[in-house]
Image 1 (tube, rainbow, N blue to C red):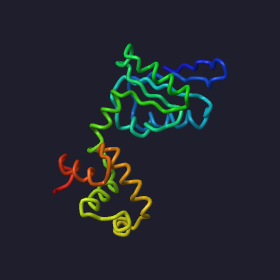
Image 2: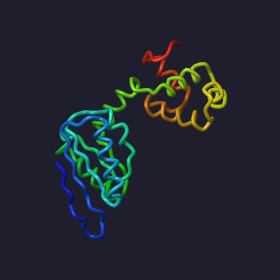
Image 3: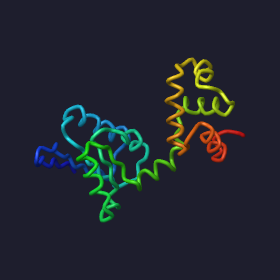
Image 4: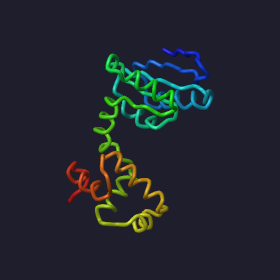
Length: 169
């Protein structure tokens, strides 16, 4: 279901999308095409299934709010609309928990290589040299690992990865 709600008081129009089932690549493609064609439109995506595989890719999209339909009545939809009004992305906390739980299983190959370099005590520069990439790219991978493993720093990333069995101590 797609429904465009006209703007009031100079706000940007809101596109309401209810998705009960969609393939990961189609979900991302749909939202990205909408963003290109109508950058003025805010998107409220209501999802019925916990599909972390494509919600992860959309998590930080501008002017996008993602709410799980089971969150109705909890105030989450109102929070999402308020975030959109401030042009802030919003992800339903229920879905955020799902993504955080799935994250360790969803490390990319480069993130795994970076994690192994961190476990050996490597600096961004030494990991970058070993992987033939820029130190700034390693920094981005470390930030991604911190987010996915809910860690505050690189030492905690390694500690959590060991605890989760992602790497050997």
